Image (spheres, rainbow, N blue to C red):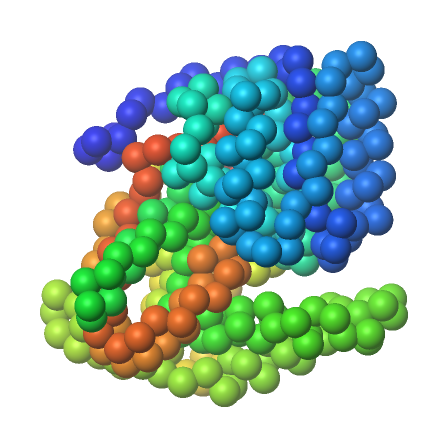
Length: 333
């Protein structure tokens, strides 16, 4: 057990009296999540279902919405998130840090596969095509998940904390995230063609990986050049699955690549996922200083870091709670 972290609550079968759904009408799969919202309403029967449209103004607007509706949150309310990983990240961060009652922080969430990668939704309840909401609501259990707490302090000693449920990284993937979050990319008419978005994603990602610069990082054992430095709180990152950690583990997995060669990076990532991981890359704390300007990303949301920025990463002592049908299952190894 990590020092200072509360004991995990026992897994329990959920029984909800109310459903609150945060819905992004401009999301990648808005049509599909509208159908899931209607399905939840049918399953709910006479129980109250409140649908709240999110604002395009970002995390602060999402936090305000959550605070406004805090009185209907709690353990007997299921908070559905009909949006992508970005909005899901905003809601989790608000649950942990907003000015809401303690009971509201214990509200279980259910991501509804509303975005592009849907990493958290996959890890909690599998892929969208296989998931059955009726089964999830009937058989799912609520488990605590300790997200990554990423404290970033700039050269002026100004500190900003970012919460990442699934992963955080610096370097190549942060550079990729800036491209995938660019409004020109998001609104590309090419995406309306069947299968076109996946193909476009592939070209954008490969191009960004090739362009991404290395950057200098100062750690306890000296300064080194890094191409990608990643911290994984679960088994999936940017649609890549089979990483050797689970959301409910009390440690995170660190991967680093100093070699920029794309054909070297990808096989090494796959090899790490297949073979498991040695203890020297499992940690519950990491600290380093970025010597040069670089890009970071937290659950896919990009942040530019200036030179001489100190970064500290650990598991948050405050968990969020999630409804899952997969994390309560024993390992098959």
